[in-house]
Image 1: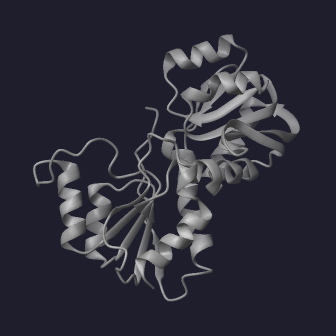
Image 2: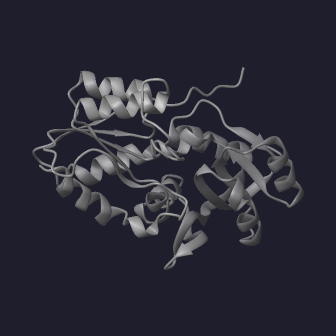
Length: 257
């Protein structure tokens, strides 16, 4: 199967026009006419991932986070990014990113909300054509923050969740924004959510949210977004019958000591 045929499937799932203006999505490295026999799904294109792709003769990497984000002044072996680009090109590996387009319309927040059983959902922050970042919905029944933490750990296979708030509070209306959710705190408050489940919350953002009446559960950036790989695996396996699809579940180490 050609790379451009797979790209058509990816962009059917998450059209690139739904990505934010600042984002880098699409084919970042490689050739569209590349024949793909082996495809690797990842969240982040780390050097470890690239080395594994080379060792396993992978033809294409599909990631959630773009490997190339900022300005690239040069490509050489003196930087991590340069080494990754060189290795991908030298071994003919295509690299494609589905980021905020996947967050917006690809199903990231909707799937995360469904995993927690949220009902009567609506978009947390609309960005384009009724779609947007995050979801807000209701638990089947009101519960304590402590019980919600147990549910999150179970559904997302997490060891730790950081709480900004009171573990004994009762919550029912829940906002969820996989990834970094600092920017949607005000939206969660405006939607009258009891709790925001997200990642990358700093100390001051957490305290400010509490003062606005919002409980924060920080499940880490990777902790919620690793479902990208499983969503895309289920999607692609129905179309790419002659392509071997694998998941490289290498997360960012996260623990509270």
